[in-house]
Length: 519
Image 1 (cartoon, rainbow, N blue to C red):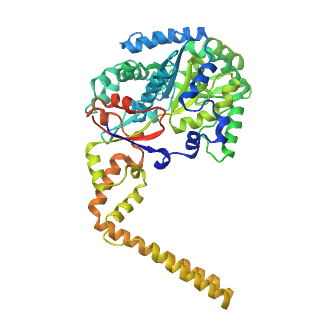
Image 2 (image 1 turned 180 degrees about the horizontal axis):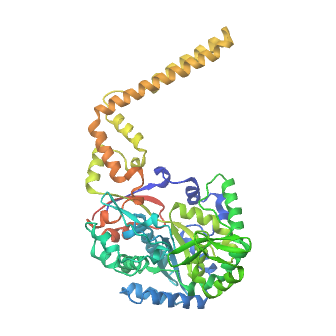
Image 3 (image 1 turned 120 degrees about the vertical axis):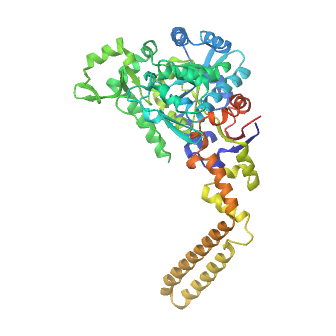
């Protein structure tokens, strides 16, 4: 697998907050803990406190969840290691996308696995276990009910509602039968009872040899550990105040924030139901349902049935860190940005804030696309140029004539500047008229230049078609490939695809990997 690495700045695909975070800009320092460098983990290990009782509950829960799943020796070893006090986790989280969803899901897990490998070498007195946190309680089914494979979008239609992890798969077979080329391990996984069970199954198949542990936190015994957070959020709304203050600071620095806190940051979770809770006078209403509770009933719910309360995006990160011996969270730019809004929430609840590590970013170039790109003759970094600009550069590169009027425009504008000086002497009132004629002349020359470019594009039609073909394959609908394509587009041709990613991705090298698919 041939690899080229492109600085993220040069891709022009990442926001200012994310790039400034990676550069270590001083003004952002208060919004996170350790920096995303391997040296930061020494202090992070010292700061992370995780009680023995919590380990016991975590291990018991995972033993239950893995009870009927065939596990590799590596997974078995990691499950055992989690019981030891010198074992820590590195975690990434993601929705239960069908067939893994877009490529970056794979990149996230590869980054987690490789981070644990690097840390094991750097800190041999400790154990590091890679974790995939399933967002099994999410209820936005429209975000995950489809995937793109072989340039076609496939959508699963079901009238189920509530937490997607609970969705029954009894009708899924009809959907999977309509998709050509689905590997047998997916067919087997989707014979499981629920969508969460299926995701655990296929992640275990794809990454079990690397020791990945899948955590489904939709469990009573785990949620009991955040009963104090539930009480504080439901009755005192502390998280909203803290996040609002933090968000205002970030906005005042000129950055955009990703999420907004609500007064209550827990959903009510039941079969076919995950809905917001809102205060209405002395009552607490579950939206889009007939459920209404008073304070006494909510207190009882927290004590006896905490599994019926589901944290939203504001408190799910805190929940994760409360129940795992976790050191770092690995995510994309938006995730890194919204975690930075939560630092004071962690401080308030006296929980160590994890190191925020960006996942690896990748672009896979199939062999037939690589041949076309090489014929065109641009540098790899230029792939990320906006399409219209790259097409214009292609026309210019192969033009037989001079098509830009840079020199001529400057000469004309200089001439008008001389005329303006003359007008100032003769009659200053003529200045506005001369400037208007100058602007008009500049516009006319720009129109002529555009016509030259269009004419050259017609003469370079073959090259431009090649360029468009390359860009359409690598940036579907103008989007990054990793946010659109499924890994099956490459795995079916190259079953060593994941193994090669694990070999070549460096979790502490924050550049964009451009990779040729193959050996």
